[in-house]
Image (cartoon, rainbow, N blue to C red; front, side, top):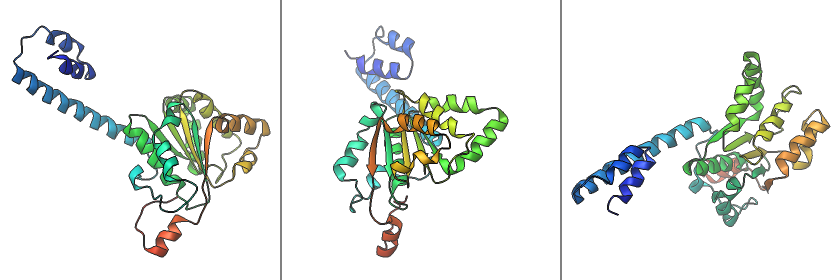
Length: 247
């Protein structure tokens, strides 16, 4: 029993051979304690590096933290519901989140704060700003790398689609959105932010059949959060609030 915690640390580090050998070594208690400290330091070091890699991969649009979310103003998102979202049960069930509301209400900040919570729990995240996605897709298509791009995103746990409907994708690129959603079915989650009411989403796609397919995959398994109120930017300017909560 003396060696069990160290064995767990060795296995966590992928050192199975060392873990098997440890049980046959007559180690003094002080040696065991020193080894445990060294292994814990290595585990923490690797976790820190992995966290940094996940943050870099995410390319979040804002530096947001769940604890900094301003819940003082009612915007259709109370403290209880926010804590439920931070529990990440929606992510564990592969559900989607739709954050809807006017500009400046804080949708982007909330999406990035939830992404940070997911990253802290060792989930992978990727942020895509849809108004700029058309240029990226055009370049990928020219390079013949669309298939690789789709496969890479299919492995991501949480995909953020920022500002749906602000600048519609070209008709030739819209089917790629369907491919993204199809790849995530029962395997990953999507967070969408949009200024458009849900009833106007269908009109953003040139092909009604394509629109039906996209909305079916996106809305059917989603938690919808409709936010209301004045712009947080305007309120912060008026009251001199230094908070970073933005749309």
